[in-house]
Image (cartoon, rainbow, N blue to C red):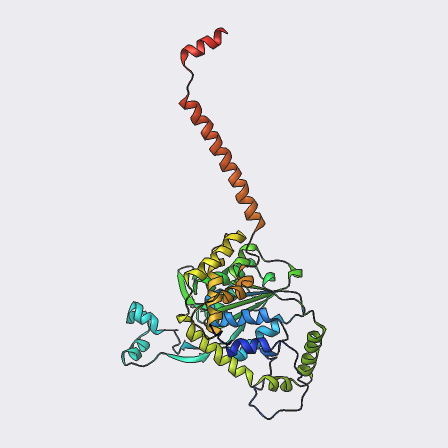
Amino acid sequence: MTVEKPTSQLLQILDSASPARRVLAARRPDRHIADSARFPFLAVVGQSEMKLALILALIDPGIGGVLLMGPRGTGKTTAVRGLIDLLPQVQRSTCSNGCEPEAAYALGMDAVCPDCAAKLGRGESITALDRMRLIELPLNARLEDVIGGINERIVIEQNKVRLEPGILSTADQNLLYIDEVNLLDDSVVDAILDAAAQGQYTVRRGPLAATYRARLVLIGSMNPEEGWLRPQIQDRFGLRVLVRGLSGAAERLEVYHRVRTFRTNPYVLVAEWAAELPVVADEIAAARARLSSVTISSGIEAVGMKWIRDLGIDSHRAEATLFEAARARAAADDRTEVTRADLRAVAPMALRQRRSRVITEFFESQSEEDSEIARTMDRAGRKSRNPVSPRNRVSSRRK
């Protein structure tokens, strides 16, 4: 008899964070809470799909980011900002030029600055562990603010032209959050999505050019009442989560109680979840380390591909997102093999809204045209194989 493996502590905490819990309790002992109190991620009531999607994006940036879609007041921004307490540590360059050991290993010592080459030669590290940060993109950000450009102050003061990195470079190995992404200029959104997909971007200003790393976790949120994203931009986000208001009266009351507690004395609410946040942060870090060992069997891949085929999805990002999200969920559950349950848990987020009625109708019309062309060629072929003889043409004229 097969004994089912218990759910990991990370998924248990995410599940148990949803039901109502009383937080209007007496003050707790000092737990070294940060001076700047944030609404705890785990204190967000319900919204299990949104919380799961955000955690999976932290575990595997290869998912391609998360787009949160829903009306105002449903906790989208609150949940994203609450991730600060859960962000894992990454290896970050300690060099002012951003040199990294991988460049030296792949391209030789000429790919790093002389100081870093000397350190690597002595066996010293040029990186150090540093916690990921949350970078929020201002809604009024210009394209130059995002990708970088010429430092105008240096031009005026020193009469020199120098390129400066933008917000995207700052977001390297960090979480970049774009609130109201549907209200941003299309050129800005395109630049961010291209950089996130490639992990780097290049800025060119006349003869000057510079390439910056942009390995980031991209999170966007939007209210459909304020306008839609172009379909090609929506498709660039890996997971899409529909964030609706809670339907149960008990859960909605719990939202009110927690918000009131946070406004009255935020440290009471923070203390309520202070013991569980480090546990989740450690589990996320462990899942990130485990991810490279997670595999998908051919049978599970076949199941996912059948779903995509039956849904008539043309975008190849569908399977890439579906399988990467499933791998991340398996890693979160302390497993190295993706199951059908992992696939089912992430499929709505990965496949949602990837079907296009316009594209379907376009291909159907093209198929009809191709069929008409084929019939025309077939008729012409039959006539050429049975030509009318000159004698028959003469006799037909006499008649």
